[in-house]
Image (spheres, rainbow, N blue to C red):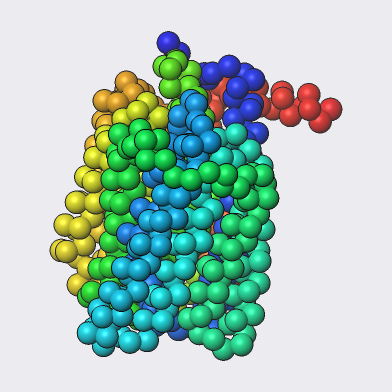
Length: 493
């Protein structure tokens, strides 16, 4: 068995993994840019209450989204063999669940919103129920593309959808539609994904629902479903706490901060998340190969995303208040704290999918459940003190539960906790060194330079400091650097 601290895996397989990672990363770069640009532009036209109303709608449809958009289709990515009956059964089950959820949410949301003196939230929630149906109808073709490992096609779909959605949102914002600019962005994005995914997958439903095939999927799917439900609740817990303790305006400010932070972490986490289940499932029968892929995935995430998250957390209080405008100026420190919390979240994509790939979906759900319980307890204690303390609860939850998640990975896959630490600790330490230097440098430069110039200087300085730090503290990087430079010379000579 190879040591995860040394370069592992077959060279061809690693290059193939990097190529797939590159295509999905390209899409994530574009989505990150459009996501941040949408915040920068739309906050000039919208208010925190607009974002709060949209946030309430997202909370309202969360259970239906978790049920309809992923648990059943994950079986299409994980199983070694699937039939047309399996595919059609998943399609009709997803669509039926979304329609039933919409039928329940429509009257229930109206009742709750009116009794909460927020009648303006009702039409937004009603419109958002359509999101569930659009996504449920498009889950199967996306799952088929991932199963075929056609990540380039998935990337093209996401890039196209993000660009068209942003254009629609800006047009609606300029027209003075308020919260409907956010609704329009999400609706257009999902419609484009729906249409283009069918075109790329070249698949249409060609049969009915089979209870026998559906029942055969339930043992695996039930574990994934539990994880999806608890995971969605965990992700929305801070927003729910803000809505309860701070109202729509507080929820709106927190939603903007989370959106900015999530766009950054999804730059690396989304590519890994998109390809992890089919790639790891294909190696589940060979533990040596599985460990090699897991180690490579953790390295890709930790070496690239840790410094990005820490560095942007260091500059967020300087840059964000200027970028998002005066109405949202308070989001800078909040986004910085959530960015630090996302260091744990990006690694969990590999943790969860690895346990699912070896058929231990219930253990993955248990890991998410532990995180959710810790989240709820911390939010109950801290949320009433403001959005900064909600962000602190998110940060504390992330680091308290990190060792537990590592132990669950060891218990399900056999990949030891110390091996995990040897992969992720050096990038973590190098990132903290860089972050501390950037904060100190920012305090000095901020007195003499504009926020934009200061941010530019800090990004360049942080990149150089991190490159030096990771080379000094990570033995794997020191061994890999000469081979990487040699490969570049051979390729471009």
